Structures are given as C-alpha cells and as structure tokens.
Amino acid sequence: MRPTGKLHLGHLVGALENWVALQHDFHNYHLIADYHALTTNLDSSGILQNSLDMVIDWLAAGIDPKESPIFRQSQIKEHTELHLIFSMLITAARLERNPAVKDQVRELHIENVSYGHLGYPVLQAADILLYKGDLVPVGEDQVPHVEISREIARRFNAQYGVVFPEPEPKLTRFARLPGLDGMDKKMSKSARNTILLSDSPDSIRSKVRTAVTDPLKVRKNDPGRPDICLIHTYHQKFNPGGVADVRAGCMSGALGCVECKLRIADAIARHLEPFREKRAHFEAHPEEVRQILEDGEGRARSRAQATMTEVRKVMNLG
Ligand code: AMP
Picture 1 (tube, rainbow, N blue to C red):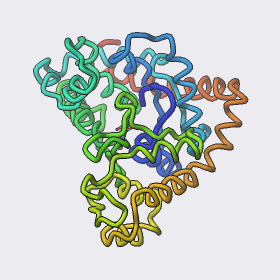
Picture 2 (tube, rainbow, N blue to C red):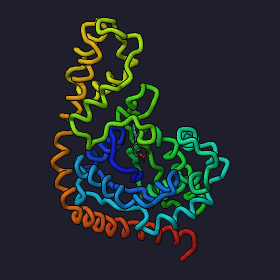
Picture 3 (cartoon, rainbow, N blue to C red):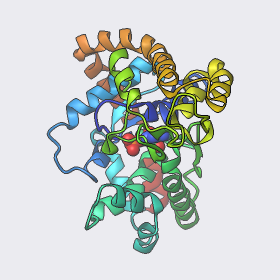
Picture 4 (tube, rainbow, N blue to C red):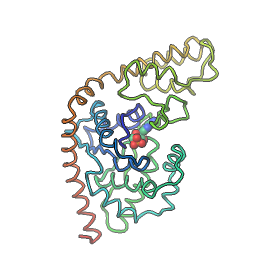
C-alpha cells in the first residue's frame, strides 16, 4: 500500500482483511510503497508521518508484525536494483496500454505522465518478486499490475533461468468498494468519498448521511432498488445478518433511507470498535511503531538480498 495517510474502508475490505486472514498460513510481507507514493505526489514532506499512520491502521486491524515483517520499500535498496533490471524486460508500449495507470491519469487529471509513473507496475513487480511472492492480496484496480508482474517474471525466467514464481492476485468478495458518492465510484482518498478506519462513530454517522442512494426513492415509502444502492453494498459487508430485512424493507417501501443509513453507520462503527483501542495504544507509543519497522526492515532486507544473489548469479553479474 502507498502511504497516503489514514486508511479507509476500501483498503480494509479490498486488501487489509485478506492480509490479516492469510498471515498465519502464509509468509506475508507487508510493504509500505513509499517510492510509489511519489508517482502521484512529489511532495514528500508528509511521507514518514503518513507511513506511520498507515502502519498504525494495519496494526489496529490485526496485522501481527512478529508473524510477518512490515517495512518501507525505500529502506531496502534491492527494490531499486531489481526494478532497473526488470525495466529492460517490458516495452514502453506495454506500459502505456496499462488500464490502471490510464484510470489514475484520468481520475487525478494528470496531463503528462512521468517516466516513474509509467514504470509504477515495474517497481511493483520488483516489490512482489524480490520476496518470490506467489499470491498478491490486492483490490480489483491492482489486477492489471499483477498481470504485468507475471509477464516480467516469465520473461526473466525464459531469458536468464528460473528464479521467480508467476504471482496471482488474490481478491476479496469486495474487491472494489464504492465510495459515498455513488455505486460507480471507487472509494478513494483523492475522490474525498471515504469513511476512515479511524473515524469516530459520530463522524461515520454524519458521513453516511450524505451518501448517494437510489434517486427514484425520493420519499420514505417509495420502493427502492437495493441492487443499485451503495448503502446496500455496505450492509452486505458490515451487516450481513440484517441484509434480508433491509432489502425487503427497502423494496416494499417500509424502510426509508434515513433509517437504513443509521443502521449501517452503527454497524460500521461496531465493526471498527475493536480497532480503536489498539490504535490508541500505538498512537501513544510511536517508538514501538518505529521499532516494528526497524525489525521488519532487517528481516525483509535479508530475504531481498538472498533473491538478488540468485538474480546476479543467473545473469552473470556477480
Ligand atoms: P493504494 O492506496 O492505491 O496503494 O491501495 C492499497 C490497496 O487497497 C490496493 O490493493 C487497492 O486495490 C486496495 N483498495 C484501495 N481502494 C479500494 C477500494 N475502494 N475497494 C477495494 N480495494 C481498494
């Protein structure tokens, strides 16, 4: 994940929940993509604080740093080294066709894409393959990037000898959570349509109140269409036991949007409640978070160095 500050529900349900669920059965590597953050924002003044805020959200959500390392991309030089080698294995035309970068350029109104931004998936391939990652738990928008990692791994193995696995994306059921402004909009910080994992119950309630719902359900008793309503998607995720009731009430007109929104705001606040205590602990002890990074960076570096030794060997670079 890029350290763009505090995390939102899209990060949680699209990726972070999978990280937590997989950490006991797999060797997870939790990477803070701080170089990647520069692709869309050159101002690096907030990058360290944003990284710490993000790690606190990871820890609050249940990531166990003893189980699997948490580390910054920028602290492990092997990422840039492998990125350089990989950049020879893919054409500029292939990167220009990448739909994920095209979407980002459109959403952020970027006029001229930088060389580094175009190479975003090449650095990501290095992030994944340095640790021989075979499973990449990401949201739907990242699937084209994982495909590029597969192509690069294949090309490297064919050219120099087999070193890398071909990684697969691992999606959750909610691989693209809509934002508060409509079903067709992804929840994202740049769109300002988020609920943060650190929002208070009051803030969640007032944000949910502004959510766009079915435009044909104007009065409380008008029948609604849950399948086109983002609040219904949120109920499916955060209030699974109440979905049938909400759905029937919405469609018959017995349940108005105000009440439906109140119910989901409470369910989201309840879901995030256990995070609050853990977050408060780490916010009060930033030195523990720094120690977690230092420890994770040491462990990740050893692994990355071992892979680079193999890479140099098969390439006759050592
Ligand atoms: P980013 O902030 O773009 O680095 O995203 C970090 C991870 O969260 C990636 O795996 C994204 O696919 C995932 N993600 C971000 N926003 C959403 C969303 N609205 N729904 C599902 N997954 C998301």
